[in-house]
Each structure stands twice: as C-alpha cells, then as structure tokens.
Length: 171
Image 1: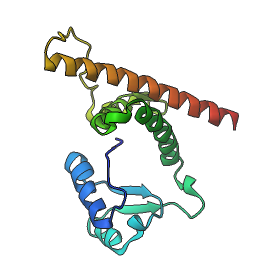
Image 2: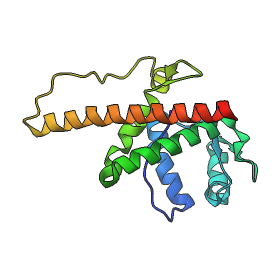
Image 3: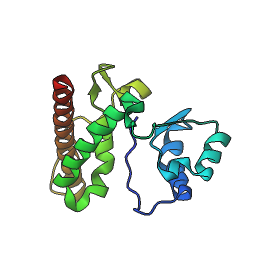
C-alpha cells in the first residue's frame, strides 16, 4: 500500500520516526523491508539503529543509480507525476485531499496484479459507491465533493500511468 502524508521541510530523523509510527506502523504494522534513497535521514545512526532494533532491513539505492529497485522507481515516477497534476488542481486544499489521492491510488487496478493494492491487502474492494446524495446540507455537500474529487483523482492517475507506459514503450 502506498502511504502519502505531508511533512515539514526541515525534517529530522526523530521526526521521520514519529511520522513512520503515526502513518505506517499504526495502520499497517512493521514492514520487513524499506526501500529508500541515501538521504541523510535514512542513513543516520538514529534511523540505522531504529531499523536494526525493529528488525527492518533497509535497501538503500546505490549512489547515482536510483533505479536500484525498479518497482519502487516506477511507482515513484507515477506518483510524482500524479501528485504534480493533483496538487496543481487542488492548490488551496491539497493537504485536506491528499488522503483521497492515496485512497484512489491504492484502489486502482495495477497492471502486474490486475487488482488494486487495497484488494491485495484486504481481500475486498473498498465501499465507495455512488449513491443519491442530497446536497442541501453540509454532509451532502461533503459527500458530493468526496465523490467528485475521488473520480477526478482516479482519472488523473490513469493519465499518469498511461503517460509512463508510453514513455517506457518508447524507450
């Protein structure tokens, strides 16, 4: 599952551990493996010791070869393009809607598995059917916006994936 969340620009290794606990561990448990670049955050003695104590293996990309893990690189390129389109569309409240972007990505079928990451993890598709919504109250307005943004985000994700596929096919 892909996790997306906002952070601060001057993040420390300790704050990264806080984000990890809040956004990854509390929702998914401990990963057995983490793929990352050689950012000072991920190679710090604090993060190294934390991963050792939690028995998390770290796969660090080789300098000047960020494609060390091809799957991660592909996902990163798709998400980068997807988020660029998404954030530029919802400039004023991207922090509010970032969880829906994550939901849409995790709920989209992936070419390698022919199913969504959500289905792979939970064994079912999430419930988010279009229903008749009355827009004359705050709950109805929010429900309508959720459905609209979810559809927009899913469409933008498909555009990003197709653009990446064309790039790979031409290479």
